Amino acid sequence: MALALVAALGVAACGNGSSAPVTAGAGNVAGLPVTHFESGLKPGAPAPGLDVKNADGGQDDQLATAAIADVEAYWDATLPADFGGLKFKPVTSLLSYDSNSDTEDTACGSVKKLVNAFYCAEDDSVAWDRGVLLPMLRQRFGPMSVVTVLAHEFGHAIQYRLGDKAGITKSTPTVVKEQQADCFAGSYFRWVAEGKSKFYQVSTAEGLDQVMAAMFFIRDQAGTSATDRQAHGTAFDRTFAFQSGFEKGPTECAGMNTQNVQARLTERPFDQKDTGKGDAKLNDSTLKLLKESLDSAFKGAGVAAPEIVPGNGSCSGGPSTPPASYCPADNTVNIDLNRLTQLAQPSDPQAEQAGKDSGGLGDFAAFAEVASRYAMGIQKGVGASLDNANAGLRTTCLVGAWAKVASQKQADAAPGPQLRLSAGDLDEAIAEVLRQGSVITTDVNGTAPAVGFDRIQAMQSGYLQGSSSCSQRYP
Image (cartoon, rainbow, N blue to C red; front, top):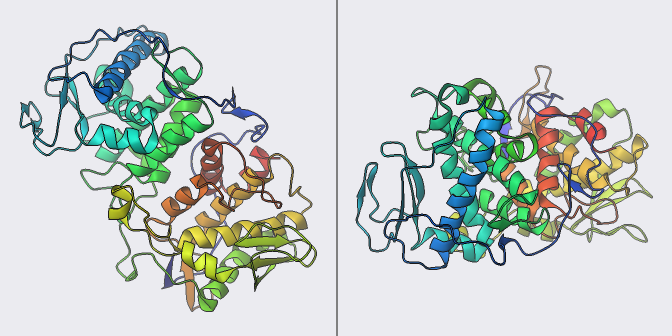
């Protein structure tokens, strides 16, 4: 978060998506059962039978070729069924290359040193880097991350096949095209999760968690503008688009356009006055501002606000979720400032790209942990359960609602320094929500929902729809 002289925070809600009650945390993921098994190629999966130029037959080429065959089978069934009988046409050609050594020219340029996968509309082809990109993704996030990237690229081929039905024109901003392709990839993964694929299987727990982690990894870096010609979206934006396709299907994706995508995008450059690039130090002063921010955001609940007190991050004789715990006995949030300070250290993007420890996750990850325990106190005040099946998701949703408030201004603000959301903060929250052991997503006793897909969706629901959605979706 950034320190700034801004107006005080006000409650607001906006955005897209359903706010209908769901039995989140009670055994389903967007209506599918929670499943646990090894995700990847099915045992005995058939040979794809596709011609891939320059393929070496290695593991990553096998994964990518099977992914293309599978995605084509999905769209062969889906296009005519969901888009008025439109007949599917496979892409014209496929290319595998090694960015370490290959220099081949394509209709979209040379692949020399190109660590990427891409769809080229000029010759209707899909290409991928088997030398660096695919093995790196597979080793870090599992085989389904390779499938994720190829399903996204094939989403661009689908845009061209749908034409006017996808609403994409030459003037459509790049980020809108990319969000739609992420959504198409999500709709394909729903098909796989339903057991309809001949090639792949994905569990709705660990399997989708790996996909979400891969989507986080391929996000744009903090400070990127949504108007950038290469913009794809923040992790918050990209996971939202993917989940929209998974939950609502390809017609939802085709309905994404410049107006409704830009209305919910969180991607923006750093403010000129944000000299710290979004990293505020965690200390007594910023904790005081955090308390003021939370008090302002939740004052409409009309209940006694919890106090934030330093300590060991646990409650004496009560709940323990260090580094921050909500203590119902005295309505306080007990925090371990040292541990939170470590979490608040800025991440190192270069270390992250190299697969090394990137330090902390950023200041907003730490602030959000404290905010989640504060939200427990508000829920206790209004009589909500602190430990039922939905308590962790409801709390995550309320943190998202507070984050939205912290990104806005209110005209009747008192002058003085305030905390406000900075570019990259929401992605710090996504990173923390995905992390095993995160406090943000737990109930008062530290029990967290098993599925990362649900945890991210809860954060997004609060941010895009406001605090009222939290009790509706997660009663």
